[in-house]
Length: 56
Image 1 (cartoon, helix red, strand yellow):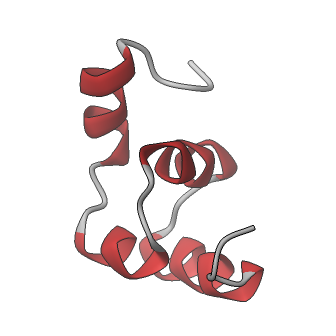
Image 2 (image 1 turned 180 degrees about the vertical axis):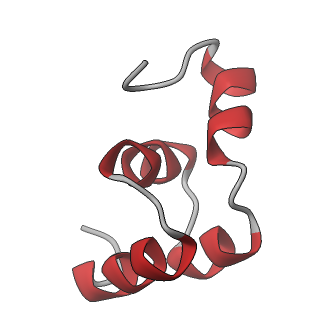
């Protein structure tokens, strides 16, 4: 695991109202919990990079 704790990601998940797939896509995109708070358009970014969205 990286330098970010599970609690950091859990706090971001709660604050941004994200689900598990959103968190997983953000990890694959290399987004940090801090950057996630600024960019909640994970699905659009992920789809542009990988051509699909997880969980759909």
